[in-house]
Amino acid sequence: MNLIDLSTQPYQSFGGFGVDVAIKRTDDLDKRILEHLKVKNKPRVLDLGSGAGGQSVRMVEVGASVLAIDVYDFSQEFSEYRASKNWSQTDLQFIPADLINLAKLLDNEKFDDALMQRTLHYLPYSQAIDLLLFLREIVKDKLFISVTGMDSAVGENYSGKNLPIVDRFVRLESAEADIFQIQAPVCLYKKEEFITLLKQTGWEVEDVWQSVFGNLKAVCG
Image (cartoon, rainbow, N blue to C red; front, side, top):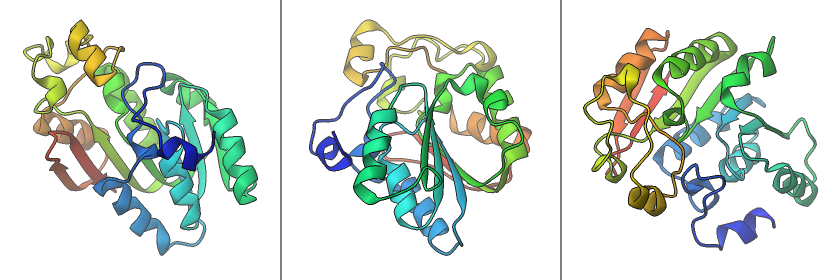
């Protein structure tokens, strides 16, 4: 099933990690990185939590070379994208992997920019710190990142709301898990916690905002 086929389907979840929004549409953060990449000369981009590759494909279309990583195996979808658009592995590569293994997987790799949409909250806070510290080492320019916010609909009945962030990694109640298609435990963020996390891991927060849905987004350099 190619990208066009996927985009005509209802919102889908793969592996219980929320719906794959990027296969259907771009949001404001997606558009920000596309504008950023358009003026560069074949930038190398890391797409973490890529899902089925909706935004990965768009980034290649504006001139980037993309390595996409997701815990769910979308190798077949990415192979079909390359075949349909006559792209090479250098243009668009996919690796199925857990983000906690990223440092071993990408040892000695460098990227111009990175995108991590709707993904970081699937890590405990301590692992989120480790991941962002590692990304600071391998990303030369900007990080475009979003997380599910405490003020989102997901956070309304979130049982970890009053826990310290270092301990805040719990599953949604059964009804909410089914509604949002999130079966894995999550660490939801307040805006100030998100900013603090980014700054303490060495990122300069150039812009940060909360969406109308209560999710948190940032552009960091």
